[in-house]
Image (cartoon, rainbow, N blue to C red):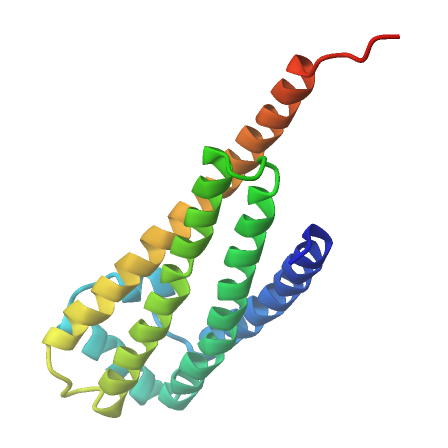
Length: 184
């Protein structure tokens, strides 16, 4: 893929990700879930999750929350394309075959773990939502563990991006300084 095509893919995926994020956040807010999503996802506590589900049932918004899980798949798809394309694009700051290029391509590949873990987390969430007051307690551990993996790989991608940009620009600048000047 050319750098220009990659830049277009990254730009379009960013726009789609922002739209999906807004849609997801609006649906989550409409569900009235009583705690921020990261708190719920990282609770590791089945009784707490069952209590939050009971709150949604009492409020009559469990269906909205269920729908939010489906909307999350639009977010997941855009994150997958966004992370991989942007990190792949940043790899182009490094010369072909260099450690920097290989490192950024590796990070781009690893960044796919975040949305894949998010999709698996949603699958577990659907199992829990099928029986919101009686799901097996062990599912909360699986659910929260997948969320922890997701957040870890999101963090990796978001930290690698500025490091890669700075290192890539630094390498380009250093290469220009060390390049021989043509004789006049």
